[in-house]
Image 1 (tube, rainbow, N blue to C red):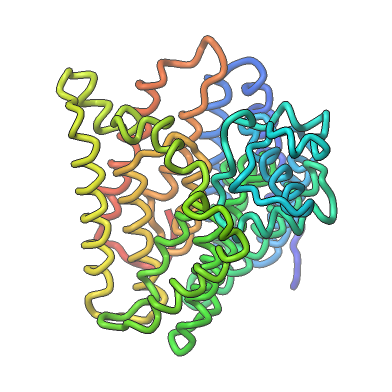
Image 2: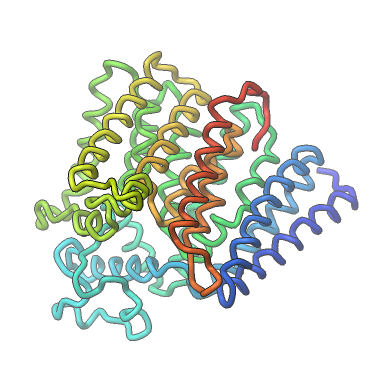
Length: 430
């Protein structure tokens, strides 16, 4: 690979700006939400600009940006999480399992677990007084393995960055299979969402992405069970990963769904003593997040603001959304296409519809969709991941939450309409 000085200089300039904008976001997190939002948007735009340059300038430019994006992640790995404390629950669950306890049976504050408490971390565990774990068994296995090596926060965050690296390798393979330039990886690598949410906060979504995109990259059409295994493991890290399962299913195929269910049952078996409690904190979570009342779903909250929300509407909306998701999944698989382009486009539709319908208020949920932006040139995943920063609010200069929520949803819906109506399906990205 021949490197020209101007390519190295141009890549260095992009990286310098990315580091500066990340620094601006750190300052914004400490003092000004408007600065935080502005720098996040600017860095997302820079990621697209850097990707377009990488496509034009070639391998050397891309290599420098990959090294720089890796260094930026390592900087965030060493920082204290500032947007979420989920990583403390991950470490706790790992320690609980390694001590021989079932995390679906014990809340962190249970006296039986007193000996496991770390004075530096225990008080940082969210809902420690009343919530058992909410995470599926594959996530729990990851927490246990990582914590067995080290119970430090940086170790868990580094493990998630390594999972993300696997997802990036899968994306690179997918770009080759799709016949697209590898330079589009930069649209993901320099985007602030994975830097903050994976390297900065250590979210387990990175592991789910590694399994999901690994399934697409290495689970070719003639190896459906390999793909189904990886996809199921991803779904049992984070249930959002289940939205990739329809892509590997063919109409009227019965054995593959049965295999998926059997594998899921096998992974839950070590925790079977909890009975129906293996769903963990999920039922209470649905209630706390306002999903059962409708207040936590943007469209129902909008009706509530107009005085039109009724008690039964949340159940009706949830049922309708579920039917719509199943119908869309069947529609995307109506021809049983096994080419990776069809698989990725169908999964993107499911992911975007799910997020637009359910409107989760935790920005890291949108990470699963972001790789679809460089892979198939879709704008809506990019809008989700970028606009998701608006859901954070820490300081007095932040506009009202509902106003920011409305702006996010308007941004995403406009991008989705653009994706659905675009006629230029040529090679490229956002």
